Image (cartoon, rainbow, N blue to C red; front, side, top):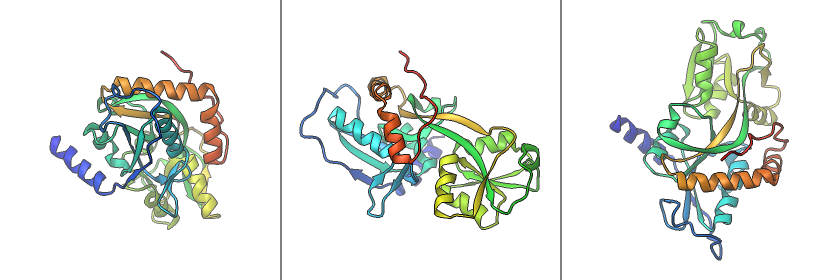
Amino acid sequence: MRKKLSLLLAAALSLSVIITGAAPASAKEDTSKLNLMKKGSLVVCMTLQFKPQMYLTATGRPAGYDPELVKRVARDLGLKLEIRNTDFNGLLACIAAKQCDLTSVGLGRNATREQSMTYVKEYVPYATVLGTRRADGTAATVAAWNTAAKKLTCLKGSLSCTKIKELFPNATAVEFPTQDASILEVASGRADGVVLEANLLANYQATNPGVLKSVKLDKDINSYWGWWTVQLGNTALANRLKAWLCEKQEQGVLKSIYRQQMGYPMGADLPACTA
């Protein structure tokens, strides 16, 4: 297990780029008890492949909903910000190996992941959908897609892959290291469908009109909230970040940033803050 973790970590870090933001002129609070990796810095791992939620601009700068949130929390806490562009499949290894203080990639909560990280709070909504080529005439039912003749793709390590195995166990599931590769496999006709988040499919449709469509299945694939997570057991940082998210949620800031960065309203209300 240790060897496997090391290999995953090496792969993830080989794809990482560290982007450092300028420290604020003066710190607003004492962050010395937050168990941060580097004094005065917040190191955040995210996968900058998911436009408009998180991506790199043409000049190589992080942009989108998640980058904007972590910029603001670092500023409010008086911390220098480091965003590490990390391969999605290596995120678990990175947080387990203490290579980042925070993962901001909208991870869904499950028992397996809870063994290697501490969940902070929900901050982003997701709806998982099935995408296929515009001309595909397969019936919009789970039964029609749950056959050995169907090849479905997904991002390796994501909940989308789990959902394929749960809802379409008879289909062939093919996992790809990047979201773009999983989509291209369908667009090129080498696979029948891709299971992914609705916002990612919408972004692809906007930039590649007439290629893919969303299949309105007779059963919802998955709707859930994405969470921030920190190193396992770092309750001090988790509690401080949760307090920040709750404050911004109550002020309406999270919904405002979401609409500004994503281009459409968040829709559903975030889960209420609890003690």
